[in-house]
Length: 245
Image 1: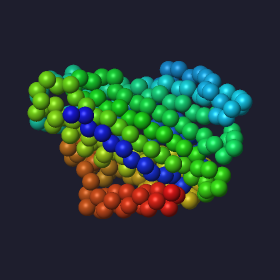
Image 2: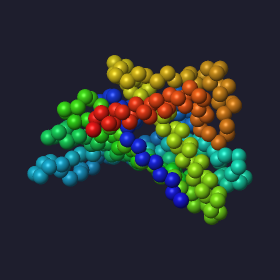
Image 3: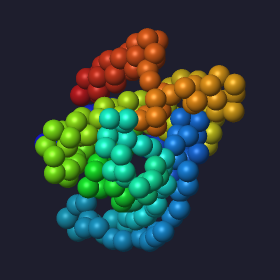
Image 4: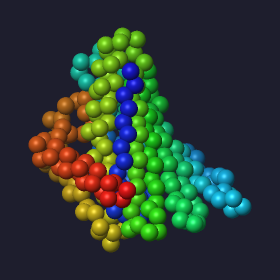
């Protein structure tokens, strides 16, 4: 059974800042599992006009390969995957047309792993939508993800899918913090949303946490304070979304 995730959130930053930060978010202290990022294709295409009689909309199309490190839990059968790294294909389209008649600009991204897909396949779609001129400068984000496994043994397949979903959900907050961190590296004057306090990956405490972390996680298990903070951020995003509507 395929596991799915759908979530709406927002960033208290202009759309242009979020788009720039997305392409420059690696490396960041919250993504120690990301090893390399390479652009393999970038070109401009035209999309149909937004309005009748309008000009075609130019769109920047980018394909990148991201190498990530990760592993399965200890209970997974030995030899089920050959190595602990996986290539992820990331594709994106960025609207290059200035806003017309209040129509918001949109950036759409899709990513999926290319290795170990029969064991665990994760597909993610993100949409960053510019706020309308009548709203405060902000960016609306919609996240949708599918987690699936093609293992023949039904019980093992279901357990792997649940593991993949749990790991994906644990990374959603760190991904958001990484993007916010990248925004402030580009434009420090953008201070509407607090900069997340990220631990220096070279510090003694960080190295100790890295050494003691469970081998099946790319990040760290949530402590009581982290769990409470995550729940508060989720509540805040929900309240912000309700306020926008």
